[in-house]
Structure formats: structure tokens, C-alpha cells
Image (tube, rainbow, N blue to C red; front, side, top):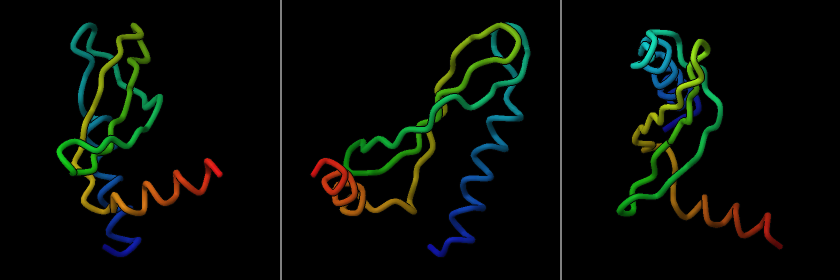
Length: 81
């Protein structure tokens, strides 16, 4: 994927988050943290969100085909050294 495709993909994730009302009060979720998880050798964007009204926390999980597991571990290893 080229950078433009990646940005559109991430933008669509935030579109889903912004259009999902809080299941407790109906408020809007705001992204608090973004994590990358590898599940069954498939990378996922995991966005930890918090309702701006009541503080309810919700995880949004999106497949991240633009991430290469080898690059993730290579970058993490470089930061550890």
C-alpha cells in the first residue's frame, strides 16, 4: 500500500469510531490510545476510546493490512538497543 492508501484506511477507522455512539449514554467516543497487536500473525490497529460524556471505555479493533510484522519487530528491536 502507498501512503495515500494507508491514510485513507486509517481515516475510515476514525470515521467508524466517530459514528459509533456510546453504548451507555449515547455520547461520542474519543481516541485515547492506539496500539498495534499481532493476532494469529495478522496485524491489527487497536484503538482505546473513551466516551467524552460518561468516560466509558471501548476498544475498536481493525485489521491493519498495511503493517508488516517484520518491520514492527525490526523497529521495536532498534528502539531497545
